[in-house]
Image 1 (cartoon, protein in one colour):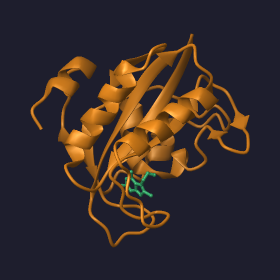
Image 2: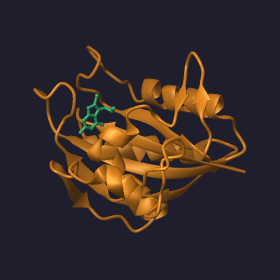
Image 3: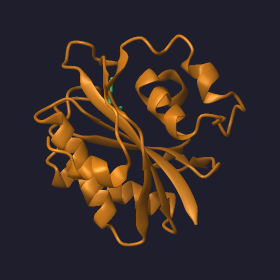
Image 4: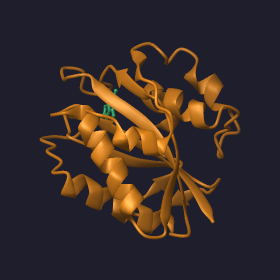
Length: 172
Ligand code: GSY
């Protein structure tokens, strides 16, 4: 069994509903279970800053699928939910990224894991630390909490969540 962590973000349309739909779609996939979910954070945009604030979460999944198959599921989820992305770093309905896949280092044409910008994004580190408070970056050995120092500005809890099932059932 493999454990992976995915980052989900939305800053277009009904952001919360987008996150819920994405998690529901993940739940419906055979051979994949969503086992943990962070609080929902409202976060200032990073990269292209002249855009709306994001809602971000991190989920833990357990699966026998390879990281490449999980990537295909993420892309399929984005497409099904009609991601509109006009340009790189720009606004998007929903974005799913693989942050970690076990402690593996994967470098292929399509996929780099751990996510290459994981350690420099407060909107990823803060929710990730909820799920793995003692987490260590598998390549550098530096703790996520150390990386998160100085990157918490603009990352605020928007809604606390009482488990995956409660999250998908919440009124949006
Ligand atoms: O990489 C995911 C998309 N994205 C985000 C995001 O999800 N949250 C915040 N706060 N800024 C972002 N910039 C990009 S690109």
